[in-house]
Length: 280
Ligand code: ZN
Image: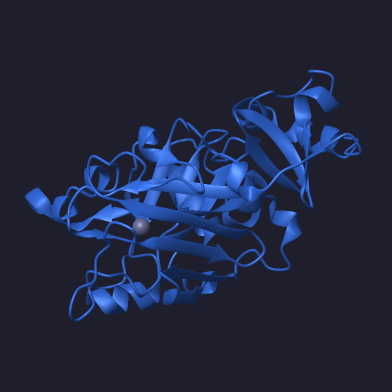
């Protein structure tokens, strides 16, 4: 099942057709995606009965973030072996977690207003929590995931590494967390722990990896994080980026106004974001 955000209303997406969930369930669920995540188990049962014959045609470009304003956003640094290797930093023994403040999140095709000349890309698998997760064992962790989406953890490297590390601020400028184009439920994947992913800038592939290279898998992240605090319906986890980011290259590469970033994950789709100059 694919769920989208059509101008603030939750829609069920089949092919290029979107069905308004609140209308189709006579107001029992929705209209927002947030309210659906809140009753995720009930929704999974009701969704089987939704009649999609009255849907309307939509394009991914018209959709907003499937996690528009979560209560908590977790982001994980150094969570791919390939990325840890390119930075020369040891593989972490606990998830290197920070937050992207929720108001920094944006839609799958929104522009990115660059904050400096040292802004970098990071394609990431994004997890949205469905069922509340509190001290969840690895074996049942996937049952707490509403679905997967594609994200970009846009990062201002200068601010990120200022004052001994400002990861949360350096990755939370306005619009630095595009997510989309929709949410795909875990049952749609043959193996949700092994998805191909890539990122290109102006058509040149800069990142290409599989999510099976993660240091802490999605279930392990849910177990580790939910041991510390509960993960709430609609919460977001940016699960880390693979090798190929700009700041570790020789010479360094950063985003410039006009650059187009395309981020793709197998079984989910593509998001596309155009960079703009500061103040534009
Ligand atoms: Zn990241």
